[in-house]
Image (cartoon, rainbow, N blue to C red; front, side, top):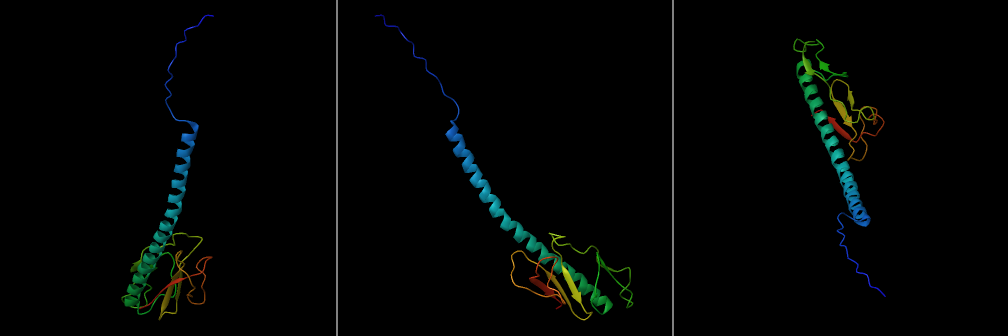
Length: 152
């Protein structure tokens, strides 16, 4: 019987196994899902902050209008300009150059209601609850209004 000499060849294994790769991909997927879920709350809070700032900007323009025109505007479109009702309320006066638009427009909208002596501006906050009315409506473009700014 002959014994053959076999030479052992050492094989260097470089790289990762399939199990190791699956574990890493799973961990990355879980971390990604958690971060996306956490960012959603931050996005809602950011949009709510913008809504409040927009309503304060509109309020500021309306108050400047009242100072010149002796009454609040009963309505306005994309901008708020004077109407010539008093010597200080010239048609060339611009009180709001571009009225702010709701961040989720056209699914939501700001609501303005005024009788000339008082006014209300309403919005629907994503982080808010309850219901408020602006004039005869509590509808802020398909959702219920839950935040209101009124004249001081």
